[in-house]
Length: 392
Image 1 (cartoon, helix red, strand yellow):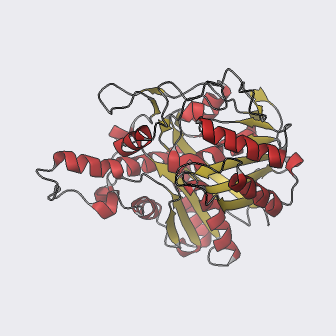
Image 2 (cartoon, rainbow, N blue to C red; image 1 turned 60 degrees about the vertical axis):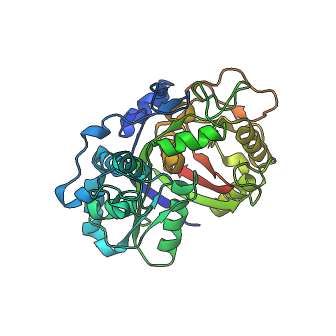
Image 3 (cartoon, rainbow, N blue to C red; image 1 turned 90 degrees about the vertical axis):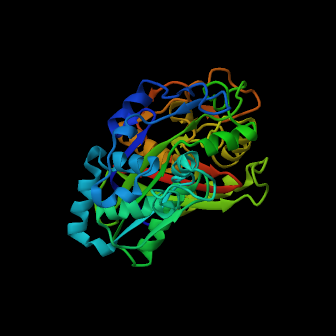
């Protein structure tokens, strides 16, 4: 496929808001994970929270969309002058010719949780509660569309942890079909009790900061994040999307294929679309959740497609697993790595697992990069892989 330039981007996560905060955090091998305060949930774990959300105020005309998820969206949109950059693009292409494709999984569930705590009985939620503007999966997309002033095709992808990686593929297809001239892609997922209870009941959360690819890994640390990117096929940029791949394990509702078959298929598709061989990849951003089964399955997939020489890391030790926002977050980490020339570290991973063979980078390493790949392997086996390249 033709390279799709990434002309602007922004992100917020536990490392901070804006590109500079993520870049500094990764370079310093700093983790944004903190212990979950006692009493907030019946789970002993660490989380990656974004600071400053309580102070965010939505515009009066969009007040009905107020919820933690949309506050995180607005905080992210205003970082790095991203919203203004999109409005400049509207002047070039027209509001109808820019698509908006967003990924999320938890969306505004936290607002529904709050409504139930305020309800006098479960059948009569507070009058202020607006399900469609907060909890509904389209709420994030609708809020972002109105906030930016876009009027082109818009949709939400919700395929668990691969959601905001798949939006890049959706954008590429809409552009190729001639429906739009440019696209804004992104993803936002915010912390809520539902995911803490849910993953806790599955015994998938760690009682300490997550340790991807470590022999002592115990499970995930849940985080929240937001990210947006502007894709313009006719523009120049230092980094472009070169290829994408999508697959489904069709194996189990909550466990990956033990041999990583679906992940490997997505990786091969992405390389094929990019016109590249596996040995062309300089850096692999692993999905790397730090659960025993997921890391083992992904390791098998990476070895089968890329071999043992490609530098690999999981950045979830820095941000936590940001669920529906993991795809955009880690895609933009790849863009940062390509632009700045470094290998991000696998934080908290100290004791190599002898059963895993991928070449894991445990310290920030300066290195010029030409091609970076990222995996997003969703709950239930919905997989997506993206390949990005730096122009000469």
